[in-house]
Length: 173
Ligand code: SF4
Ligand code: SF4
Image (tube, rainbow, N blue to C red; front, side, top):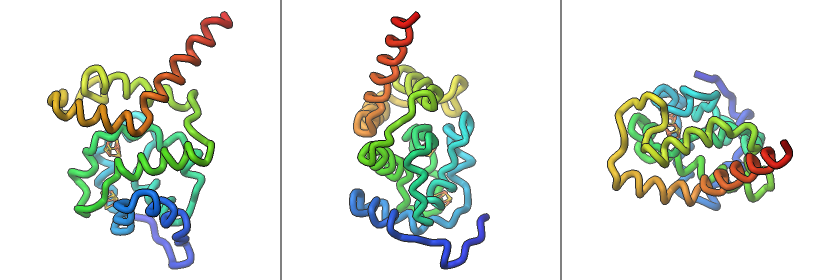
């Protein structure tokens, strides 16, 4: 677990995010236990680490908005099931960060997002994130609900952008 002193914290970034999505004020309850990381499928295929992302937000480190890491989260909510703090909603924090990233004009860097797009495609077609699913597929109602969340999180936008890039590359050949 990381050790920090009071001077390591800067609340400006946290306050900006909470202004947009009030529920995210609860991330302050994070005890940095790392349980969410152990159960996270995105961590298994990338350097995505939600515990570190929360630390960055609480230290006011806005570099996280430029980081491709925030695009690897799959909004699957497994982390919510294992987090010892009832009110921390990690997928909502990630959506908050992605929207903020768009607003600031950073957005996704498509080359960094190949894995994310592949995962999303698997998820939207099969309901599973990994090639070998950890728990099998999701029930249809959950798929519908997550499709709506994905729309909100602009995953579809990323798909579209990624497809356009592929078309452009093909044209150039
Ligand atoms: S919602 Fe995101 S952070 Fe949580 S387990 Fe799923 S991929 Fe990991
Ligand atoms: S499981 Fe919850 S309390 Fe533990 S590091 Fe993750 S978000 Fe923080």
